[in-house]
Image 1 (spheres, rainbow, N blue to C red):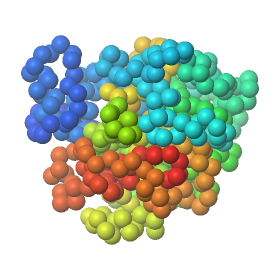
Image 2 (image 1 turned 90 degrees about the horizontal axis):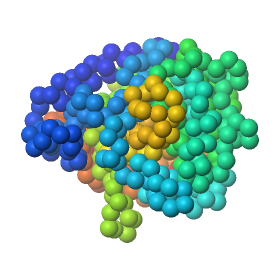
Image 3 (image 1 turned 60 degrees about the horizontal axis):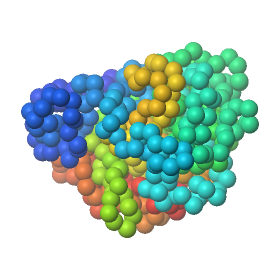
Image 4 (image 1 turned 90 degrees about the vertical axis):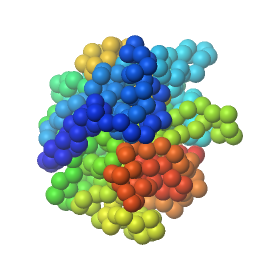
Length: 430
């Protein structure tokens, strides 16, 4: 499979320029406290949407785990937070406290704590590039820190295969994907502690790894990666991501307004991103659109039957709209991850990660909690929108980029592009 990524990379280059030059409405994000003083804080407040994210990457405050594509197919979508003191702390208690949200907070925020405690879940597959020889050990550290049940190679709960479904040989390490692999298995663990995990590590093709993952008949397959859309993506959708009965999730992208593949595929659940905060309300949490969340209209994939009524009501897009649902993605309100090997821009140990890479494995795990993946699971949310928290504020781009169809890049009541129908409120929409 060859995915053409020039348009996606070009968009990121444009955002970097915008980050340096543009001024506009407030991003609504917490300014950096990097010692540059009031002028720098004002500049950050004047950056809109994805320009804020691009500025943070350009200045090193945020770290892209995978700035380069692999195998011509795409790149991982994890974004790290360099200054961990900016992040929330995981829950204090018998298992300690580290930077970034931990499982108890994520389960609380998305109303899945009872399911996570009692449900045995199923097999969740994550598709990766390259090997991670410390993954078994690092997952053990994460799960022990947060009091989660054991899940490792020895117990059989964790299985690591190459792209052909074999235990040996493992592919060589690809820098950046070390963090992605740890993030993915940690997020499956945080949302479905009793799920079994299959890691499929690609050496030459993420597409081959995708087919290998499907042959294992998991409940869900997570894809925390993507690249620019291309004319031949419709055949690729059917060849690689069309697996009725399996919830195939894909990150919507970290470049703001604009669509990437495979999240553009109708047969997958496109997962956008939010900023997550504690709040004094009945839920105990609040969310806004994350500035980098991908959204928009596919160039090549037609709308699905389950999304068509939404598109017809809102207008502005005759093809597939991204996203479907969302999950936390903001590095400033990021999640705790443990990675012991260098190679992803962060020092080894406890790290804080965001990006829409967080949501793909998390939503895959929530599908495993629900146990309901008949047909095309992407349709379930559209039949059960009241089982989601609607995200009604925030933006991923200046409004003129999606005018006059502002829902494509702004949080609004009902469906909106960056967060779809909303974030999990239990498992009813999955």
